[in-house]
View 1: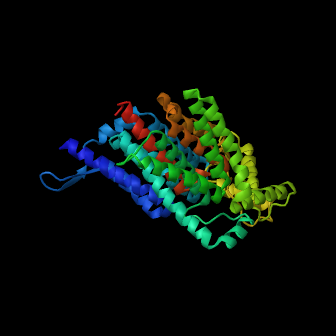
View 2: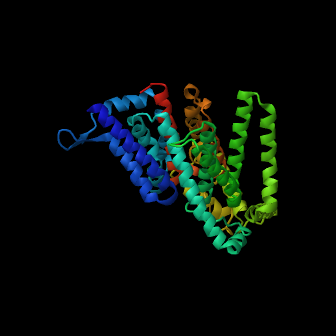
Length: 421
């Protein structure tokens, strides 16, 4: 009966993971419910034989041992502990406890994924197939809305506004970029659910999302998309020695942004605005220009970090200190921004010590036991690494969920491959 229950636990976890990907885009509440559900099936069990019984999971101690044995799970707690320890020298406890709440998944979810029986290769690929379908549906709805309000949205884009998306436009573009790469990998591995011809469906959806990324014209998403595909091309060339084909693909990639600027109005509007915005920043005219204000927010964070280089100002006091600098040095900017760079935020809040630990926790899962050999996992880290340069990704619940979910999904699958469980 224990074995049968383990299968049910895995199937339920698979279902929750599917719902969680929808919730990432559409519902913060559902996202929280999914995370709670993952923890619940790790801590409790529902026994249906011989009668319905509810109680604690008898494998709790075993699952805790799995967390310790598979070290990336433990290392992830550093993201939480950095904020926790910085409370010792933070005075704004309200903001500090808010940061702790947001970072709590780094402490709890590793245990949840360690308690789930490792996903099979088919389940692992199926989850990315479902991601491809969900993201495609979302992009179709975004595209229809853009088509219905074509002139209005293009005018707003010339003023620096993004195409409306069901979640933050930067994180949405990152999710689309990751779905494109997932589609490429699934297509290359000839994955399908039932019919072999599904491979061409996967290829068509991937091509659609790649094209739609240029319609969205979110620079963060486009940057990580091209970097990710470029990485896959270089790895393909290295593995197969097919230099001519790889070079042709890279050349086509370099030409695509030029073609997109010429033929896609939203892409052209975004590029023109970015050029104008940069000119305003260089001319010391930063008021109401999004890129210029982001650059100022990064400068403010760097200045705070330099003032307390070893331990920072405290993650709990970061917001207060940022606002104080804005009030003193940029009084004409009525809406202060937190540093639009995760590394700068960590440096300002916890100093060089915190930043070093942060970088260690970020890259450890990638290098642990050669995880860098897995294409999707490397691409995921490329996306996260560069997203951290362009925004403070894991300073909100959606960003934390995006990072922890896909990271732990991969680690769960890898642990099964190595029979570490």
